[in-house]
Image 1: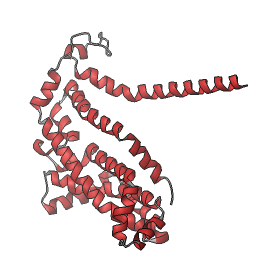
Image 2: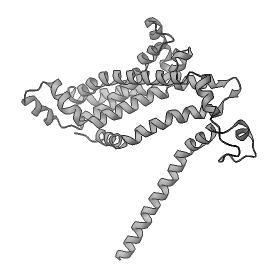
Image 3: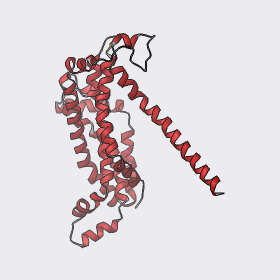
Image 4: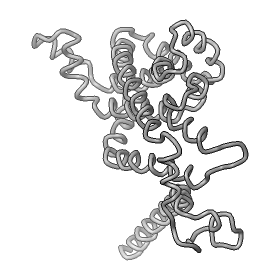
Length: 284
């Protein structure tokens, strides 16, 4: 009996590992393909008789050299990081008090209002393009990275407020009340007691906000026209797709160079990221 149970346990673990390996291969295949393509010479890439998963000709670094010498790639990265960091900071400053008020001060209306705010995030960017364009024109921020810094919180804040409401509600109100009994104000109790308890949730919001700003294409294409102010999502294809000529190897190299550090950061903080999800799913 015990032997049969042990066999079933082993089979179950093997099945889980095989399933995980299958999905790992599917998820990792685009990165493998991009890496191989980035180091291939043109004849090796375009010849139909060559094995696409191997180097028939010797690998080359010319594609990476082309990326850094023929495009302002480092400027694209710098612009994307500056925009992402500033927009994320604005998102935290505005979404934390809004989410706290909805979770603690609005009573039974908190959740309906939070749902209404989240619905704003679901509005397609194409519908918000015209009013956003008017705002950018009035502020005189055309063709500037500040135009994107103004626009991006418009869709990062609704999502962040929705997420943080769940995190705040997971903290029992008794903790804040005890802090206020000890002499803290409500704001002091929130900053010194509640925020440290929802650190995984704050990290989740930072990751989501920064990722949303990095992957945007529509607003970055519409509001910025000069290469010196472009982000990676727009600058790379604009400079490496010229008519019907695609610099595939350099395009793949740009994707890998950006993806590797982001993937490393995700893996380093993966535990906090998952902890933030589970924390936001628990009601206080």
